[in-house]
Image (tube, rainbow, N blue to C red; front, side):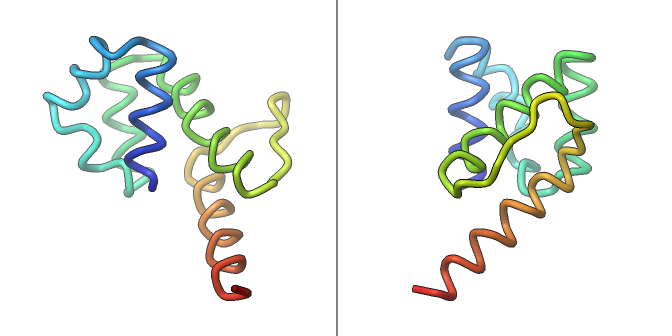
Length: 94
């Protein structure tokens, strides 16, 4: 699910042609490892990486009904951990 979300966010924000850059560099292979993914995004997009990370997090938060505070300090890794925990909790209730 995360790789699909990353592809959608990057493709929507930058266009499908730009999405080919991280795909060709195998950047999305590390999208499940937040620290590594963040490091590689930073090296590729510089300051724009934080914008992409926020976009990546917004969709699962919306789908899982997790409130998203755009003005709050942002931590990509913590945001993904929160989404995973909520997803696991919802899955165990079904």
